Image (tube, rainbow, N blue to C red; front, side, top):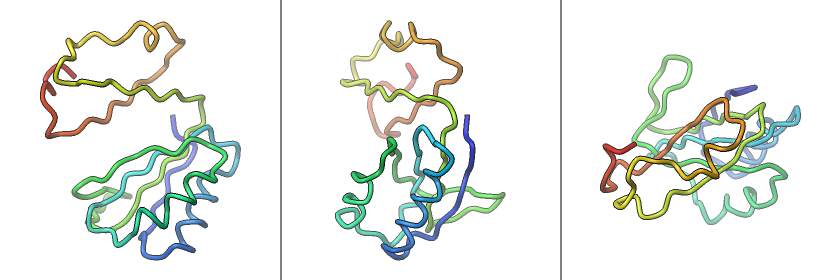
Length: 126
């Protein structure tokens, strides 16, 4: 699923650029970011970097991240995909009945990764 996994402390803008460029090398088809919630970053400053990327960048903020067997309350784990990816959003999770839309399942899928808001209604259906 991933061609590389890297860790970055997330502390400065220049470092973010280098981190994202390193993840996007070798024809990465997408980048998944797990950001620990105490990471000192300003999304408004990072957003332009993300928009300039030539590959899809997705992710979220979590209480902590795990990298190489260690738990971090500050930092970012970046995962570069090696296979084609597709991003789908399930809207109105509170009304989700547990059946994925046919457009998702009709594709030749090897793996499914689901990220959802832990505070959202109807999580047991996932």
